[in-house]
Length: 192
Image (tube, rainbow, N blue to C red; front, side, top):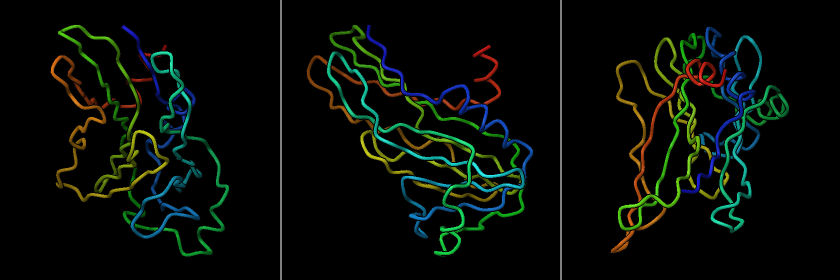
């Protein structure tokens, strides 16, 4: 069975781990309109700024070079001043503590006549548990550089978005989609 992996690196997960205990200030992005959807988001805290973005990356998929949306995380405030100047800085849930950070990992398996032929594993969302709610940054599409941001108040049902397959079942082939939520601390322990 072929395995195609498109997940955050250890360094990227470590950057996210550094958010735990920080105070959330705002979200920003020069190209982040008020409906909070774009290819790049700056996450501003009292400890600094993380840049979270999606880009299309070529991956070898069953011998073919295919383009897939990939999440990235890096430290840096490049673009924060411009976003603020343009009015693209949002203070929803500002001042709340970040209690935990989780990654949503999606695993899609192709099963042909009862036998798994390939598995595609990718990180599709970053979820921040805030002291007064939550913030989710989610990759919106398999092949496009689009992130969406959603906030929820305490007690609101957030959960993992319903799985949707980009592949269609046929008579002898089916696609199984599973999503799991992994705290960054667990991912880092497993990597050691």
